[in-house]
Length: 391
Image 1 (spheres, one colour):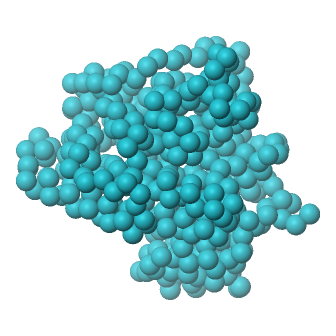
Image 2 (image 1 turned 45 degrees about the horizontal axis):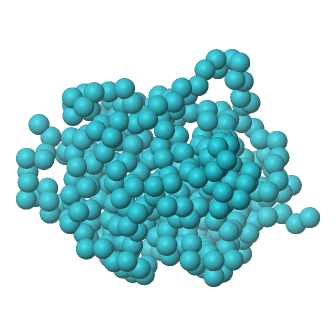
Image 3 (image 1 turned 180 degrees about the vertical axis):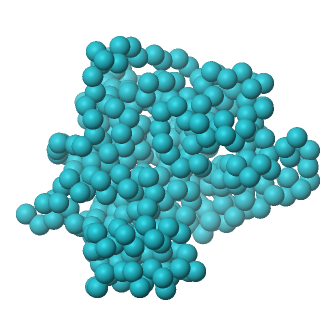
């Protein structure tokens, strides 16, 4: 049996490294033929020497020559603008793992879908920004989009237990982040250090801040709406501090099917790669007796207004996902830079969303325009209301 050829977009990030860890355990089934990074050229060079792919892609033009000198023979470099899309086009492959944080991975992900590739999707943003476009394109080309995000992988697995038309609701679980028990006053005074102190997962700074605001769950609501084709009001969020039950599906007969496991991203990554097969996985096994108990409670909408925005965008669709995502990316970065307060992330994002004139069935160009407009609008609003800036 021939090996499946895999391209990893974002191979130097935490998800990319976890994907390579999974692939290292399955050398007879998979071959890595493409890797990419934004700026971490030295780590990309190390990966290239180990995996010997046909191509690597690097967005950072400042280090293209240094990287080229470190690559093994036969490995070509694609660099600069649109390098991710050009990587997807350049190499024949069976699967593209999309693990680029933010909006940067959307064009390459869409191109992989247009080419009919299987896409293992780790980053939320492509479906948040362009869910309508991606799913419509996948239907036309026959591309499979399989979730790596642990919550959506859990839903995908649970949905195998019954017919889609028998599903009553989807419940996405959330760790609650570092502020799940914080008061509104404590949130108003939260520091960057506080927000980056996640109790369960080790993630990059942007995603960790999204977990603190629960904007990550808002984005997951939108992602689930498009990936599984359910209405916004069929998707709920529940806080589950232990992060053992990753999500669940309730059917109309009252049966609830849940997927559980230790909080290790290698499990959903491997499931997406090997589906419909299940193979031994390097993740540690779950022991419920050692764990003792599981707790669940509803998130407080006053402390986490981002969830309301997620439902709003999931219900309205069009270009609103692009605007929500872009505004949040900018505000998240501004908070990490000390330019705005923690609660201003969602407040300012909502202001931008409310100022947007929605396009109902946007093209990729219109989505990119909406993204660019939202980023500029954040700065325009801040300039007009300097009171928003940190005390």
